[in-house]
Length: 239
Image 1: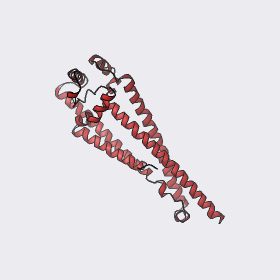
Image 2: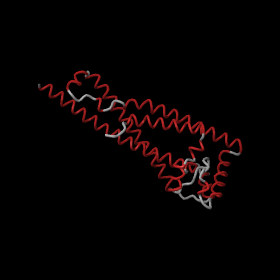
Image 3: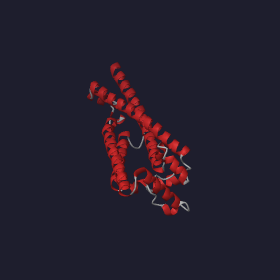
Image 4: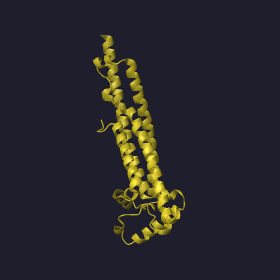
């Protein structure tokens, strides 16, 4: 049995997304250039994002000026210069924050279908008699349907996020020169090959992978509770 239920995990995840949305609206540079993202990017040799200047630039060594110059040049090529650059980045962060708020609201709402935990499913004769068979069947169907839906969604998240993680690490983890970074970014999808995207995809993969195991474990407990109920009903029928 997991320490946290699947419903609580999903709602905690939704609140975390709301926190990220708040930082994207108020102080995006603090979030996109945070220390965990910098540490993971340096450890995996993944370049910084053009829209997230490094706050720890003094610790990067002799190539710091070249990397910052490349980042500024790429940002100018992508979004423009001066006030137009700041405005475009602010609008992009606001749009991403809005998407996170909507997604977090949907996760928080639909996580309620998993609130019927196996512990609340009757497994003794007295409780089984108190609850009607129709009501029990309805709640059980709702729970099993929700578990199936979240298992599918978790599997899709893991496959998609792991694909992004492997793609960035295998093909874009050693672009150290300015020319390689520039050519990579002008290719389109190369814009996503940075440590911000890598960290977000890795965190998404780990969370949904863990959620998949929790929901799977809860499904097994539901099966055990259902078998116990059937055994109790059979014993009562024999008596």
